[in-house]
Image (cartoon, rainbow, N blue to C red; front, side, top):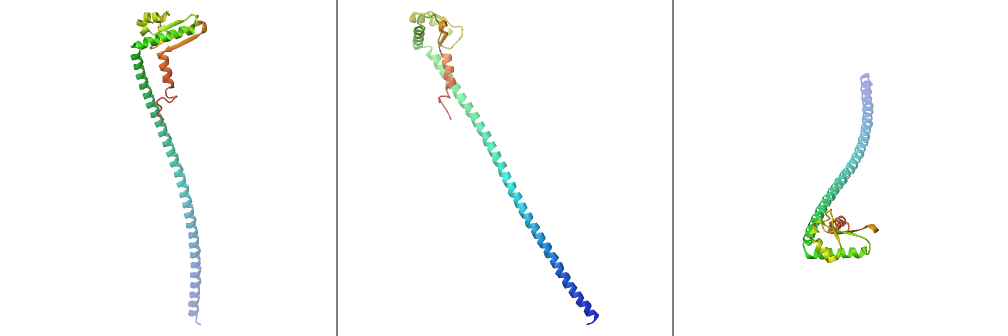
Length: 195
């Protein structure tokens, strides 16, 4: 074997070894890159799942907040509508009371209230007040009930108020108090309840 053949053979063997070594390095590098790629994919997938969960939680919270705000707004609107209806009902009731006060039945009602208060007071001293708007009925009521009446300085719409000082008693049969009491408990007892 000549020197050139030896060199060619050495070159061929070296090239084979270098290729084998290079291929092994490339394969190792490819495997390492493939592992890095798989790890990166897994990490990216984990991060995206975490981000999706966080976005879902955030979206749920925003939805709950929007729902709570809308519920509060609905309750506010409902309260306003109920209050408006309540006011309207009692405006109509006040008008009906005013109409009733123009009838003979109102005079009869006052007479019954005066007699009832007088019966309750018995022998005790009492002061029965009528509303200033009923001053025109004073003599008629005194004559019908047989009781001395006093015209109140305070307007209590209609009805009577009786004071029995010896017993510390106030009998309040005034329309103002009756309307206010009914107004205060109107929705509490289910009167015209919407919800």
